[in-house]
Length: 229
Image (cartoon, rainbow, N blue to C red; front, top):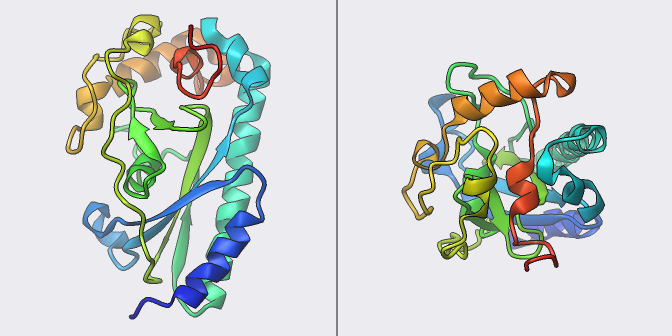
């Protein structure tokens, strides 16, 4: 199939009409499992989390953060389905990946890593915490992905890591799950963070939030906040 910029612009117009939405387009064909290989392009979308929700969780999650985490994920899922339908109406196939649904309980993963499409679409880089760090919002953002066979004009891969020597997330992690390595292209999630250690900590210490959230590494990151001192 050939690139059709007019059709892509219709999707862009739709995305531009969503307040605070950040988005990008990527070729993720080399990163897909076999069952998704027929959908090699990705629309990566993100919704920021407000400072008044994130700032207070520097010592651990609270109810407001947990509620926001769930509501923004639900919002992303609805938007993902709407974008999927818009792409299908243009004559292509598409599949909206749930924003936060674990389907691999052994490796603690979903159907597709949203951070892969986000980085490849230029939305940001990965911090030592393995969080997506965007220039405008830092890690204070939730992301999702819509896979499609619609040929897309893609963005440049985000290769610049602006964490520098900052080690705040490593030092603040209550689970001591962040290894401390700097991210660069080709570095795996396991090189950055012990996901199982993080998961066990959340389950043991935050059962009131179903063991789903922590957020300390989000709150301490200087990117995306005016409180960098």
